[in-house]
Amino acid sequence: MPGESEAKEKKNFQPGVPQVKTDAFFLRGSGGLDWGMKSRLARIFSPKSGRTVMLAFDHGYLYGPTTGLERMDLSIVPLIPYIDVLMCTRGALRSVIPADTRKPVVLRVSAGATILKEMSHECVAVDIDDAVRLDAAAMAAQVYIGGEYEHDTIRNLSELINAGNRCGIATLGVTAVGREMARDARYLGLATRVIAELGAHFVKTYYCPEGFEDVVAGCPVPIVIAGGKKMPEIDCLTMCYNAVDQGARGVDMGRNIFCADAPIAMARAVAAVVHENLKPDKAFKMYEELKGEMKGRKKKG
Ligand code: 5RP
Image (cartoon, rainbow, N blue to C red):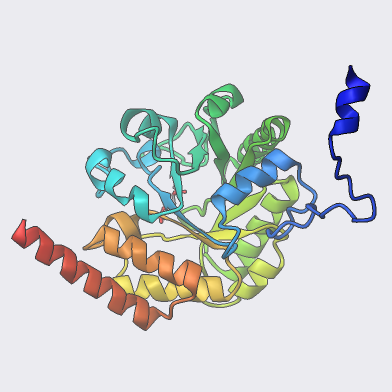
């Protein structure tokens, strides 16, 4: 009898204790999102540091087998334990990334052009069903503000946000800078703000030495920076330090990690800067030491 068993159970409703609040969320501009979206964002950004190290290796969709990505099974897979997020195409994911890595995926879903043509001429190449099948935590699309096909790339992003919102999958808007355009605070401020206003949940942009703090301040959602062309490791670590110091929530970096002299050492040094605010000189020392250890191990082996 229900009445009998209930009488025996000792209930503990504690009516005088207010329910623990769960509505505060650690990411800028994300407090009003639904549970699934927040949960996915909390896989991308560490709830402890509020930051992320995303490894970008989606370049092949534009550049083909570019330097460092000729064999992603050899160059990217060994880096997986040292980064927080995989940012790649569905082709790379399905063909070379083991499904038991447990790292969240930010899926590159815009495509349609290559370096041989006008790069802003993109469409959405992956439907939301496939993003769900691939367990994507977020989808990423390029937006070419001021580019020839600006309107189409804004529409691509908006369509993705609509589809992602239906399924609780976040959207990363990527500020793609055309060849002729200046990467200054005025342009990046415009591009990041437009992308955030369209509803992207986080924005990828470039670091600019002058006025980056204003770019971050004017963008109501988290910003992560791209690495850009390969540069000396100390310069890259300095850029990462300055970017997070000025408000970036981490990096979405490719060539400066997978083309480094010692990619694992670089991934670990970047992570120490991003998550622990390690100063650039110390991070570079860490990089050099790890690189030395790895070379020593290789010689012995
Ligand atoms: C390509 C991208 C790349 O993911 C981005 O440029 C990051 O890579 P890198 O650090 O090598 O610049 O968005 O369009």
